[in-house]
Length: 243
Image 1 (tube, rainbow, N blue to C red):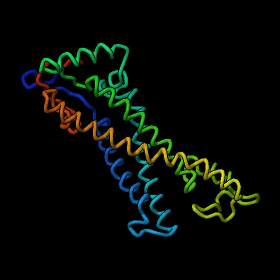
Image 2 (image 1 turned 180 degrees about the vertical axis):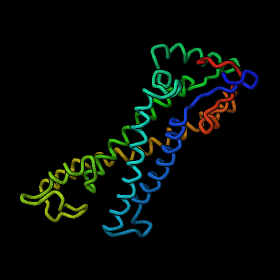
Image 3 (image 1 turned 90 degrees about the vertical axis):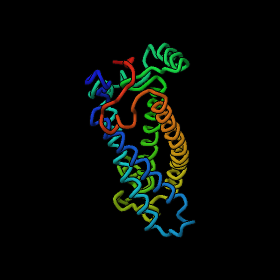
Image 4 (image 1 turned 135 degrees about the vertical axis):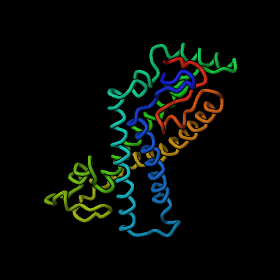
């Protein structure tokens, strides 16, 4: 504790805070671009050039999203105390922690935490798993749609006709491709596209639940969660359980 009179605690380190806001911005941008791609016909966007341009922009933002997520996974082993996986995710005593948290909630004086409360840990776990899933399915589509790394060269090599260099294969253009292998590639990538789209819907549902939970926790006397993700310092009305 840095100030016993005001109960100010150091919570999130700078890399964790940067990850959070970069991730949030990426999700917004990727969602907007995804919606434009899904409904491009309805808004008057047509032609392969526009189609490819939108996809390239979506994938470029996706790379930022992926790099940010991979950094956060690594930072979970090297960051500050409340950024590490051992304090961030549910552990072996999670059941007892959750029971104690719920019991305190029923008294009208909820427990306070410098890190995440037990329900917050579940939220973080669900979000991280889904973000990783979105990264993986997005990379599959980036490789099979526009032949971008890390799987693009493999996809282009597979569909290239005999004697044709994979570098000559262009997105949404059958020139130089083997028709049967191209059909197989389309069949392979189709489920990943559907999973990616529905995963985005689930992600926004989790984001909405996360925002509601943060607002409820902050207004319910569990401390300043939002400002802590900006300043790194959390103001708590009572002694934290996880100090």
